Length: 100
Image 1 (cartoon, rainbow, N blue to C red):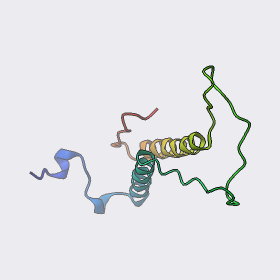
Image 2 (tube, rainbow, N blue to C red; image 1 turned 90 degrees about the vertical axis):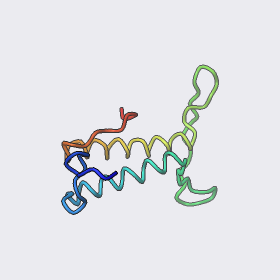
Image 3 (cartoon, one colour; image 1 turned 135 degrees about the vertical axis):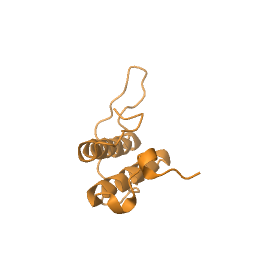
Image 4 (cartoon, rainbow, N blue to C red; image 1 turned 180 degrees about the vertical axis):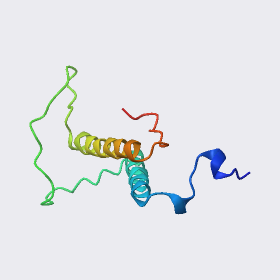
């Protein structure tokens, strides 16, 4: 069943602002990377790899600032920035349910 765009709320792609389309594509990419745990952490010895900060532990002794956690937080920060921009640019955009 195909519903007209007026019913579904989806604008035809030809009418979508290129800036909004770009943000939607970026959000989709970030969501996929987070879902698939694609953090793009440089391997040991890579000059792009930053030195680790002093470890921070919670009260149970679990490290809270591992490289994986820091890279995931960067992706989440980027995702939140894109969601905020989309909310400003597109009044019909509804943020994801897990957006904070």
